[in-house]
Image (tube, rainbow, N blue to C red; front, side):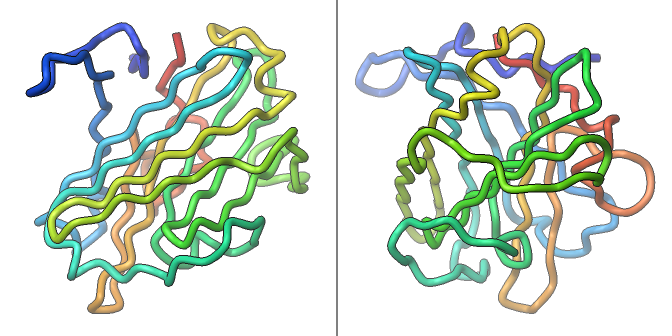
Length: 198
């Protein structure tokens, strides 16, 4: 089954404006923490090839361990803490991209030649513009960026997985994704790439 992550479905807000629909993320069954939170995400292609990513985490944000906000910069190892992620694959190729977005405003983009193989940093035209909004019950991250290899590929040729690692103040982690593969959490597995940008 393919889950469409699309700008086509919209809902009305209190102001009467149309809002893009979000795709719910599923908590991995092996995650003991995180039963009291809810995660949703969306990804769409905007004008001039720009990609827009948005994540919403609802619940008691005080129970989530968040890194301090820093100046936006590229950084590795962001997935070791609370991190919002997108995995993007061409239908006709084993290669895929991994996008890491931290609540600290740090970010990373990697390319893999196949499953967990041939990883290297992917150059993008401009660093992503990351916006963070937080309240006691809602954490929202929005990122806008242009990645040349992705914008040159038709949207219908891409499959995606939107995912999140949540580090809790207890030290535990919960793992969220559009779809999980069998076994331990593994956002890279091809079974997880069930979303589509249209």
